[in-house]
Length: 167
Image (tube, rainbow, N blue to C red):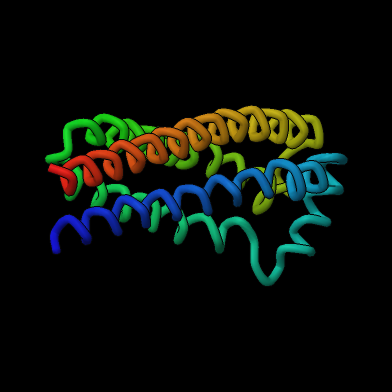
């Protein structure tokens, strides 16, 4: 029974991580080109468009799901040595990505979308937008790495489980 729970927890984390990655790629290739093409006007247009829901309403819950399922997968999968390091490093990528978001992106979100031209010059907003996109690229890279690592960890766990059943 515990092996089934471990399997489901690692698979759940993989699934959530892929949803997170897909969401970040949608932001990267569909939303952000529209949001940042003509700062500050495009920021104002984006705020009007995202009045009901925005990345801010979506990413914190999916981020918490990723962290929660990752911790559970790490705890339950810890005894499986071939999968352990992959799950662990996947979690480290999530922690790094989350820390980058909190430390670097959240303050820029406030500058661009809350304070805007009421507080800052157009030149400053353009520079902030460039920084945001660069930081976002780093987040995407850590998310890709984390997704690959948890996929490998899941496959290592699955292989371990198959070999265990044969013996």
